[in-house]
Image 1 (cartoon, helix red, strand yellow):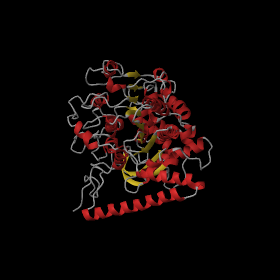
Image 2: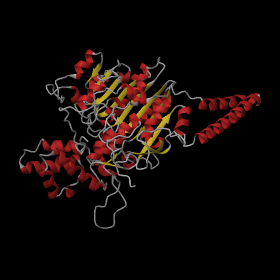
Image 3: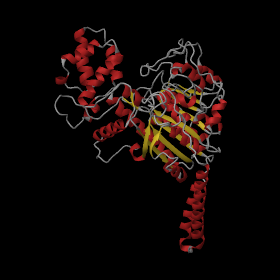
Image 4: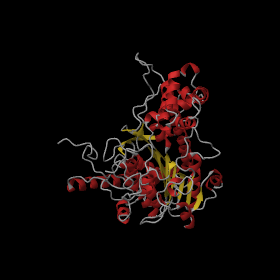
Length: 565
């Protein structure tokens, strides 16, 4: 029988990542006995060496015996920090393009790679339960709940039952928790760790869950990102809630600290002056692309990460448990949707700086800490090559074109939109001199009249215009795209830890993350590493309100195709 595309894994695997039992109990017992025998022999061997070697070498052998003993007796419930990092929409080509761009921009040798390149351990297969091409909601739910679900699902299984997340499980174990993103905090990835909704567009409900309005109460201690929109009613500037509730005022009354702008963020002193729980909503919707971001108005992802790491580390220094932190380089995905190479390489580099902050933290922490970084999917079908003529293609691409482009297509489309009512000749001059030459670095001989006419024709529709502008840059850089949506390409997994025991588990052939894996195995790894029980959490949240109401109509520009099933 031919399996349909909707069959979960096209191979008969379960929707949930579990440790599969052998068919024969006798075979299982035989394997266990053999393992016990091998371990016993190895243990006696190490023990014998430790007690019979000369005093000159006894120290080193005791150290070896200690390491062996530790690897065999790792305690999942021991104090540790778990940092889950998501590069939304970043595929292998995104990394390659950003690396080459940085080498060109900074005049670096070809062996000078990104920080993240140095921690590559494997790859992840990304499909959802409903399609070979996942969306961010199903992708994040695979990480948070360790199960496959349908595109659009936020912390719910394929039957729309709420599923316990790793963030919730660790909070119940005594961990502190945090979410750090550059998109709306109610967007798919952070939502899938901290809320439960049948569809990603239920962002009003997601915001309510994130502040504790569901059976478990408050499970998030620190929130940093954009997305004031779904915390405020439309009667307040920047608000977009369908009801009249002001969740920011409500959280303050419940004891939350709140920061809503750059000066208030700076007052956190890099995390040294934080009172938890903290709600930080630094933009009405998404924080601007890094290529457009005014550092006087918006912090970088690396700055947000520094605050979170410092605050959570300080809050748990005297605790029996550490913290769980989700970090997302959110707008790599948006640049892929927009087919904007100039914005995307800078988003990847901004994430790389944040990743470096995490590595520095891990290397200086005296608490067992692990960071796992991967993508939920690739976006845009980006390739660092493009055939621009009918002749045999050139083997090259031009990073200098991206360097000369100083703003995203999104930013420039809005800039043109604001001038749309100018007289025709004035608008064309503005486009030629200000937009193409100054902002995009397009030389005059390339700014043909037909290009300018096309831009003028789209001036009143910035959502269409940005694709025209981005295609000009992509064409000149000879970068190709296959879609404005997601692709099914495998994505990279990166990891780092300061613990030999955790490193041993990462390398484990059966339960580790080295090599090629299903995305649900990442969630299962975190569950196993921390001794969590996601099934038990699932029982605790079964009465969560998760179905959409009549007022749940918010659809963002990137995922309007996600419709109720």
